Length: 215
Image (cartoon, rainbow, N blue to C red; front, side, top):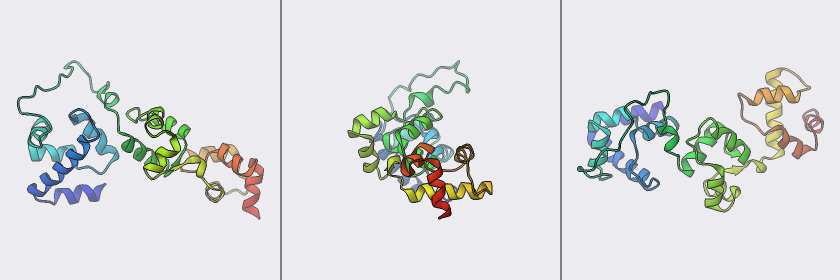
């Protein structure tokens, strides 16, 4: 992310504007209404987009940015905002949903390239701007097809090799040869790996899974 910001800042204003034109045109293809500044700020937290401050330096205001790039007309009335709204409420982050591609990208950054519907839904509780799993499934026909289309893997595709790799890493971190389910779940809070049910599905039970590490 730092490299992206530095590289963008080092470009000339003319080239910066060329990049911003391509970026806003791409974003507007997946958004039915003019993208709001608050939504763009949210996207920069998850994706390597130029920071909002850089946009203001180039165009003065967000409205000028949209006008100059043909997203809205100069005579268009600004959208109404609630003056009494306090920063803590931030309703705009809930109203502006991420696209399917943006939602899955965020999930892959937090969990990894392979995740289940349940893992996605749990993560969405922390990031409500993500599109719901039901809408993604409805759009693509199935969850597996959705992930395949966007270059990800369903959590069901996690192999025994991945399970054993995670178990081995957890045992090393806890300095034990007899890892418990409780320890592994604690390890998962700060690391990425297959869930306990997934491991039991692959090996039959927890004890069998651990036995493969000692063979």
